[in-house]
Structure formats: C-alpha cells, structure tokens
Length: 69
Image (cartoon, rainbow, N blue to C red; front, side, top):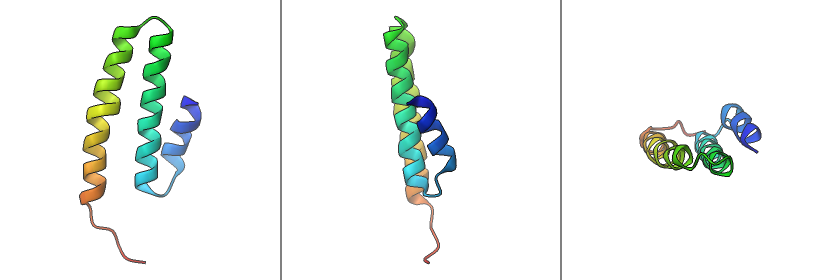
C-alpha cells in the first residue's frame, strides 16, 4: 500500500490529491513501523511526517493561485 500511495503522490496531476496520497503513505509507514515493534519510530513518523509536513504542504497548496481553465 505504501508503494502504491508513493507512486500516486508522484504521478497525480492534482496537487491536493497528491498531498493526500503522500499523507496516506506516511500514515501507512507509521503503522508498518509499529507492527515491526519500532513504536517510537512509528510515532515520530506519524507526528512529524504525516502531521507537520502535511499541514505545511497543504497550506502552501491552498495559498498558491491557480490558473483558471
């Protein structure tokens, strides 16, 4: 699932959908770390990457002006 979401995050043309796929990939990786008994790394994966990075990326995407088609 993480590989599919990573490929979608790179290949999608819509930035909002790509950001959601990137966030989903970070969440899946955090769960994978937790399953592998690396709970500490999994928590940081969820907090830092899925939380803070996605909030900043989505804020930038929403604040940029797009051309009307």
